[in-house]
Image 1 (tube, helix red, strand yellow):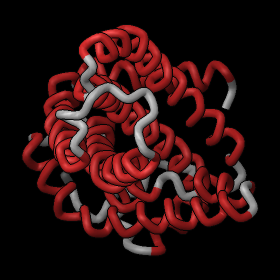
Image 2 (cartoon, rainbow, N blue to C red):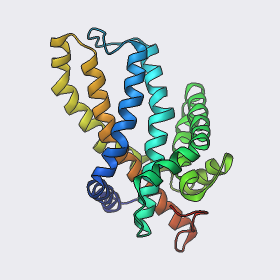
Image 3 (cartoon, rainbow, N blue to C red):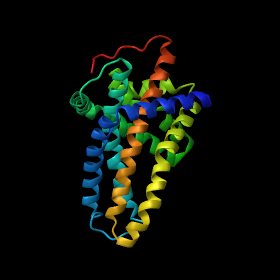
Length: 246
């Protein structure tokens, strides 16, 4: 993808994000608050003193909770929203959430397989792990948009990325830099001194939650738009209709 193509994709994602801000926040805030809050409560972080280097066990648990629950749910809901907008449809939020919950077991299965295989590849030979992480990245879209199940969703993602691997990696890095690192850096600079002064780790939890509310929906929208571009390029025609309408 050229710089112009990447810029257009970022602009389109931001425009969708902005135009559907109420839906995006209405979806992201409850999911992030519940998952992050329950995790932090279980780890005792809401009453803990400020700690700039929390135990690695706590970090792993938090990442797993986000990766296996928060990210799949937000991605499933917003993938439907993006695809529906492309078709000129405007489904109710309750329909989007209901569909996402219906396919959540399938999404969780493919997400778990994607992360597990990527992790094994990363800790053994590094390069295979990175390759698989990028190649299988669009499993959620495969399930939600195209109705794929199990290995079919993985195979679809890998097939679409094949021949576009470096482009896909660069696009993903650009979205994370724009929507993730910048907001996280700003929040860290603004809130870390407050957390240290108040000696409260709960403020750190708040910063993490705010960053996820900003980052995850934007990445979900952008990755779906990119998935649809890959899908159209592979088909060479108009997008294949999904097995059901939203």
